[in-house]
Length: 247
Image (cartoon, rainbow, N blue to C red; front, side, top):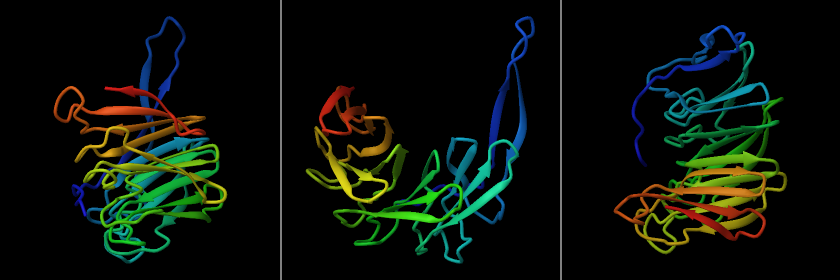
């Protein structure tokens, strides 16, 4: 388990005010969103996402469930700052780090817990919640769990697609990385994206993003051009085809 920096963070949502053309643009801070249940080393604000008038904040070392560093997440109203829901780790275990990664899209709140031990130690899991009711809709477990795969280290949610990075997966080489695409409704695994140019410690899947039919995956320690120079890869979500490599 990679231990996180011990920080207590406050998330500030900054809105830009549009003034008439003859007045300079100004900034103000109408809403400050603070940890609803602050305690030492919660790391509230480690991950954040905003969509459809809601704000999702991960508190990856939160202990609200009664288990040390099991993690929590919170949903707020973006206009008023009111707390809408507290999303607790559904299966809290020591060092799950639920809330390390979050993605909010429409009525779905996706939360990663890369330290979850389902299948193997730190194999990783992710959870999809209803952003209106706070109900758990679906659990995504690592399809090929191996110790320290860390699936859920990065997450992205769009439409009916759930994208989960497992940057410490050892397919091909140690820590080469793998990414999984799931159906948000059924939970079915749709596609596995392996590192196109696998090498040790590439960490393919360290960052992920999905929009429509496009999937972007980062490998920040890929050695193309220079040691740890980093690369990113654009895939077709339907066919799984590699569309472009960015070095």
